[in-house]
Structure formats: C-alpha cells, structure tokens
Image 1 (cartoon, helix red, strand yellow):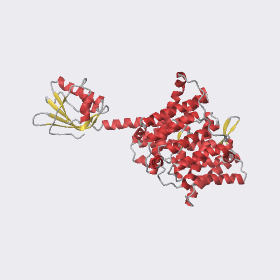
Image 2 (spheres, one colour):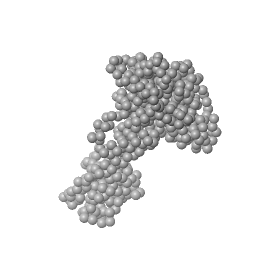
Image 3 (cartoon, helix red, strand yellow):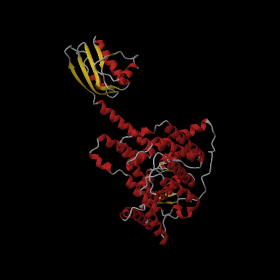
Image 4 (tube, helix red, strand yellow):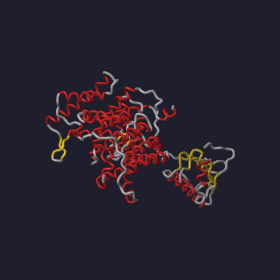
Length: 509
C-alpha cells in the first residue's frame, strides 16, 4: 500500500485546507477559459469543460509532478481549428486520440529528457510571450458583439467592467498583506460576485459565454472511417498537437521545478498527457495540455501537492452536474482581473535585469521566441527556432575556440598540440593552422586537449594527412581518447592516418 501511495506522491505532508482552496480557485479560472477556447474553435461548450475535467483528473493523479495543472489549453485547441472547419468534430476527436498515442510513445521512449536542451533565454522568451498573450487576451472581455462584429464597450458598461476588474486586482494585491491563509484570487472572485449580486450591477457573466450544465462525459467512439485516408487527414494535426502539448507541458514542468526547488519526471508527464488525450478522444473532450496560467494560480495559492489538481477537476465536474446555475452568475470581470494578475506574475521581469549581463546572442534569442509566441501563437515553432539559433551560436563560438601550440623537438619532429573540440564548425580553423609545404618531414598532432567529434572532423583529419602525403611527409595522431579512436576506426574506409601508440602515457577518457 505504501508503494502505491509513494507512486502518487501522497507520501508528502499535505496542507488540506490550502490544497482545497487552491483547487477551487484554479477551477474558477479554468471554466471561462475552457469555454472561451471551445467556442473559439466551434466546439460545443461542454466539449471544453469535459476536456478540462478529463485532462485535469488524469494528469493530477498520474502526471510528472505535483502542482502542475492541465486542461483544455488554447495552445493545443488552436491547432485543431482548421480540422474542425474542414472535417468536423468527429475528426477532431480522432486527432486528439492520435496526439495522445504519440505522446505515450515519447514517454515510453524516454524522450522527455530532451527538454533539458532548451536554453534559459528560450525559456525566458517562452514564458514572456505566454504572459503577453494571456494579458492581451483579457481585453476581449471589454468587447461586445454588435451585428456579429466585435465592438469595444463604451459608456457605463465599459466603466463598470473596468471598475470591477480594478477591484479584483486591488483585492489580489492587498489581501495577502492581511492574511495568506486564503488564496487572494478566490477572495477577489467571491467579493466581486457579492458586489454585483447585492447591487444588481448589469455586467457580463459566465452565462453570457455559454451554458455549462450537463452530464458525465459520455463514452464516444469517433464516427470516422477507419481508413488510411482518414489517418492521413488526422495524423498531421495529431503530430502538431502532441508536439505543442509536450513543449508547453515540459517547459511548464521545468518552470514549476524552478519555483518549488523540486524535480518532476518529464517522461511520466508525457505518459499522463498521452493517456488523458486518448481519454478525451473517446469521452467527448477537446484535449489539452498543462496550462501555465492555471499552474501559476495554483502555486501562488500555496499548493505543492496533487490534491489541488484533483479538487479542481472534480469541482469542474460538480459544476457541470449541479453547480452550473450559480457559477454562471460569476462576473467575467472578476475572472479577467485574476488572469491579468496571473499574466503579470508569469512575466519574467528578471529578464530585463539580465539584459546588461546576457550576451547579445541570448538577448536576440529571447526576443525572437517572445515575438513568435505572441504573433504566431505557435509555441512549438517558437521554442524550436530558439533552440536552433542557440545551437548555431554555440557552434560558432565553439569553432572559434580551437587553438594549436606548435614546436619542433630535438629530433626535428614538429608537434601540434590542439586545444578545443574538432567538429564541423571548427574544421576550417583547424586546417588553417597547418603548413604542409614548409613543415618538416614528420609531424605529430596531439589530441590530449582536443576531441574528434563528427564526420566533418574525420574528413578534415583525412584531408590534412593527404596534403602532407602529397609532399612526402608523414602525420601521426597522438593521445586520442578511446571514443575518438573508435570513431576513426569506424571510418577506416575513407581515412589513412597513423595513430601513434604511446605505451608510457595513458589518457583518461
């Protein structure tokens, strides 16, 4: 029994009051967001809530770490809009299930660890871009539809909305100075709800988005032809959704690791996400991934265990079943204020302080990732481009670090002692350090402080020996580490070099 408890991280000490209140607060912020994204994509509103519940409950129990909140995230829903418009809801369910299968494969192959390759500037850009998106999206609540067109509120409706949002923000900022026993976000929602109810203020409420009453998520096999043609239609969407979900999810997991000074399990998170998305595909949900805004709401409310995520998911289910009439009366202004504060809290303000200390290349990477996230809303593309730019910069800087110390010993043999890695980026600088025409008849290239790392390096070594051979001179390679020797031996068919044996000097790999 204890092993089972340890598996779900229930061995840790849990503050039940904090966890329950945090879960309730998270649920209050997830409901309007899930509804909004479902409506944006053209899904029935309940599909959004079912997605939030299914993603939330499965990942809260089986996910990669406590404190992480998953639901019907906009990042994954946006991927499915084109499929919804072209083929309909049933194909969407099929794509969601396919995305889940792909995510499980990633988890089983233990590929989640590669998220560690994401550099810090990319993380800064990702988080800052999301913060700006969350902030800007709240201005949609200050608009209304007139003859099918979105128009800005004006006059009393605008002033009421702005005033209630300001009241919400003020409570969130000031209430923690009184007590931190109750999450300030939840207090703000309750107070604004009471003010609107008592003074009968006319303002937009959750019911104005859509009705949220319903039943348990029904089991539903997607009504699509099980053919190769169907797979060709839904597979690209499934791949993109899986990539976006894993990217946002694992980056959010890393962010939570930093905030809580603990370590999550990225591969386990991949498996949990995949399982939840497969369940979404067969239980009428729109799928999703970890949600950075709701996760930060959860953490700022003091949650550090899995219970808050379970409470949030069950709260959404209870609201669907019996609590809809009350929740539908919650003012959107209160939820807008909460999300604005989440956006402010999400933004990495420390990145501004780092501007004077960061290399220009890191600043460029951070800005590129931020802008792509904001304007394209493509998190996977933003992170991929950021990683590629960072890798190219690293390769360029590493290429400039290869050096050679040269001297001629008493026997007339010239030595080249190399420092730095020999790889595709440094082969040109490597070649320029040699003088085959003027060097003596025998030279030694010493790799004690260098390494041969790739095919380009092998080719460079081969070409330099060919150049010396054309002048009737001989090249020896000295102090190669075992892995470098293996690499050269694996390329025996295309190289011709003399690896010098040195029985009196052993190089530690």
